[in-house]
Length: 488
Image 1 (cartoon, rainbow, N blue to C red):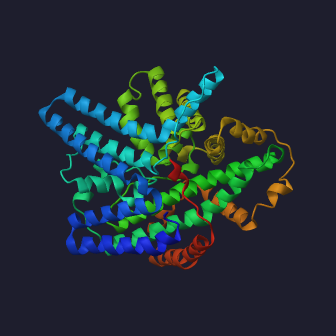
Image 2 (image 1 turned 90 degrees about the vertical axis):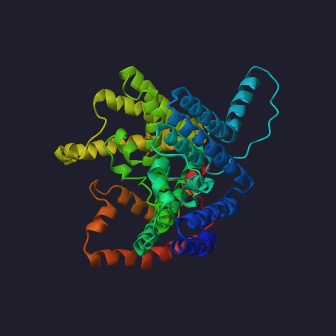
Image 3 (image 1 turned 45 degrees about the vertical axis):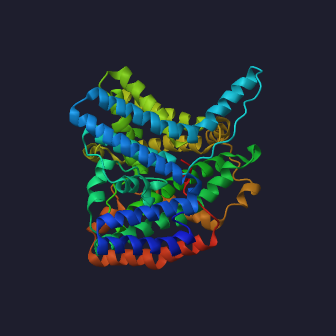
């Protein structure tokens, strides 16, 4: 059950709004938290991971106890005890994540090595991957770390902690919400008519981005990336790379919009997760605009504890490479993700060395249009190259696409590929590209709120009367299309 499915839109969502909002209005936050937790467990078990509900329960129970221990050690001023609890928290949570997400990968690497040196194969039963484990594990870590650092107090009601970790809008693919950002909202919140209206509009906006823009781009990307070596011309390679670049942005930012909208409908204010990343003038700026909550999590809980930029250039560069290698590995158990992470870490180091890290608003205003266009084009090129690595199953597969991208052959798109490309998908891809190329200062939400009332009404009418029905028709007619980040 995904947000862009008939069963969610027509059955689960109305039930959730009726039960969640009704319990908040009639019975208050305490009861509403229990209702939302029950809905979240149902959401996870029904369509995504009934066999792994126990894993959520274990994660909640162990981290509940660890946070209480961290608070007790903090209140006694025992730094050694705090460190011991933090280490236990890391060991427990990373062990869960490591076993379920990476055990198959490391066993496969070991098996390849054993085969190369002539040893017999290993006996191993494949471990199933619980959907969303990377996200709910990072939420659990955030909670205990925040308690240990004194940012908040440990919860005494396990239902509240379970809701934070398991809340269905962000359970499967984020955004990654750090506990101290919403601890007050879990304890006490209200739901207004404005919350319901703006949350619903934000949800529909995300649905349209996913179904109308991301899915058609994904169909093109799948066709191009699966082309045979003989059909992988420069045109096919570039079309596939651009299509995936559009798909992953509108897919993941669409999910984030839907999650933020759903949370708003239940009285929660989630932080933004995207801020026009393809308008960036550097890779450093890109990571301040792309998956903002993940970047902030790694900055606060990994990069800064490692020393950040306080230990001189060499130490800083080592920290950057370490953090981005871990960021890549967090996305999946494959060498392509690790290489993608190291690639971005290396680009950040190069920008630091060249003094091209970040362009603030004042500096951007001082640059000429040609300088902005050149820097934006170069940044986009580097990002697209990275997405090819990210999308590929292996480095050999990535090279099969990257090589023709930089060896222009003027062969066009072969017939065997062209006949699989639906004209309407190509048109929608062009729309997606156009939206991503809008000037950096254009921000839809800000433009909407700054517009006159009649313009706002017209925009909402267009979204609800034209875009929403078109999205619902596509949802009803197309096959199952999960969000890309569900695999992480």
